Length: 113
Image 1 (cartoon, one colour):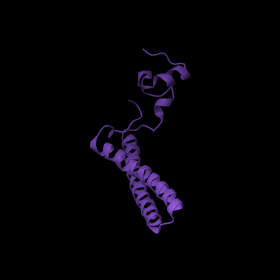
Image 2 (cartoon, rainbow, N blue to C red; image 1 turned 120 degrees about the horizontal axis):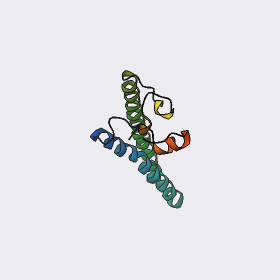
Image 3 (cartoon, one colour; image 1 turned 120 degrees about the vertical axis):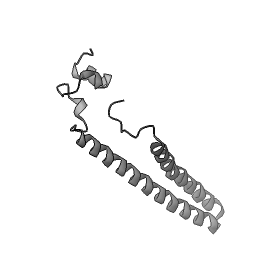
Image 4 (cartoon, rainbow, N blue to C red; image 1 turned 30 degrees about the horizontal axis):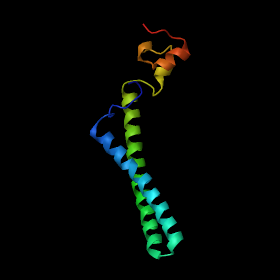
């Protein structure tokens, strides 16, 4: 698929998806713990929500850092090959029209060979 990184489908890409799911689950857990604290006024729920938020921020930071490194590696690989990140968008680029997504071909008025 054009426009995807070389690491798509690899083990590292799968781990990034797993790390990215932790903040969603932990923020949801913190919301549920806050609702439980609202109903019971037991301090344990407040502590649990605080730790859940802290964990979500840590995992979110790790996922952000991982994504940023992957994106910079992708751009460096594209620059080493002499291609700009969005060069396939232009119908007049050096690549063939078949490497463009079909929606881009239709909008650019390029016919597939």
